[in-house]
Image 1: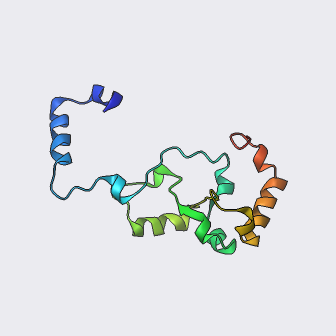
Image 2: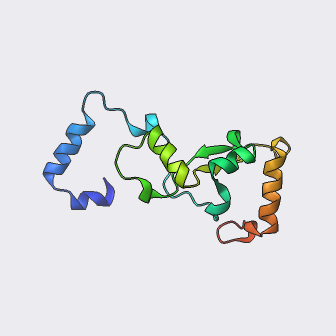
Length: 128
């Protein structure tokens, strides 16, 4: 519970306990990976639109991401919601971890080169 327990009364704890033991409950971690606070250093470069993902031949090099928590209007966010979200916002995180540079499509190599020319690598939280 950490610090949030300071704000909850006994009735809320009882409701949480009851919900946790409800039949059919599936822990979120079994359905999705939730990473709060991913820092890219330049979302406008590292989070692609669907059109960019297709243009750069990057389908296998991206993972879906919700970059704007304000877009989450309910506690239930499904594939239909993501389809609506990705029409409005960039929603594919460029994830090149574990992929050899030689295996990148030429379009991604060109995109990286354009970022380097724009000094993306020297930006706040991008520099090593």
